[in-house]
Image (cartoon, rainbow, N blue to C red):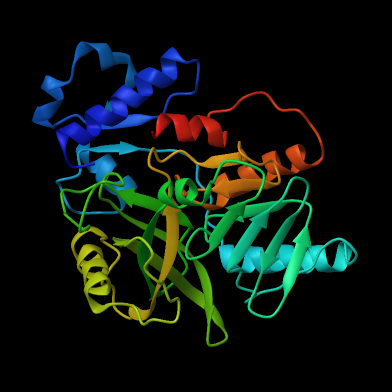
Length: 335
């Protein structure tokens, strides 16, 4: 973290965690930093101090602007490969229960009292329940035939955001890591969705038959998808976001540019955020045939798994206690 206000925000979150009986984050502040004298005494037991050099070493940077760090255990996974492996397992283990139809775009969703009809370009599919995920929130129509219209409310409750990342191949094998950098750099056209930050992951990578490589993936720049606008995953990565990522790596990531490090590729993806940034997981209050596992918050992989587990319990008939993720709570808090 670079800015005083950023640190105060995380310290206040730590205070609320402590107050609620949750584990607090390990926050370390540079001993030499003059701004430390202005931190309120109410946060005195919620952070520790260490030499500035130790903080820069954890962040793998030489940029002295970074004066604080939050260190937690993280995982680094090839999420695309993981998803493919899971799909392969389900197809092999439950052939009568699981089917995958990629590229079957749903244009209309009609909800009835006990069933739903999903209309695609060539077929109509009848289902007992329907789950909408983060990448399925735009450019289709929902008709609730049993009561209150939910189409407008649903689509206005999710804001599309196009995120950009770039990958780099670096010689040598380094330990896997995941690091976020809260800086004072403006990398968004608007900041309504949260703090600006860059992030990177690093893991071993096989390239041209050799395993002596590391893959460094970095992201941060994003752009809001206007309402009703079409998103195309086939579009080329814009040059501006890619240059911003590369400039960040050259400035703040001390392992780059190392000799032999090469730009490999750039990609983008569509994310969906609720107005209050809290994921919606559960039954649509106006028609229980429809369920949600919707909204990016934090790293998307683990929250989506958490949401899937909760939905599986709901679909099996289990009665779960109220949760902050329940759609009706999210709707009320964002009104």
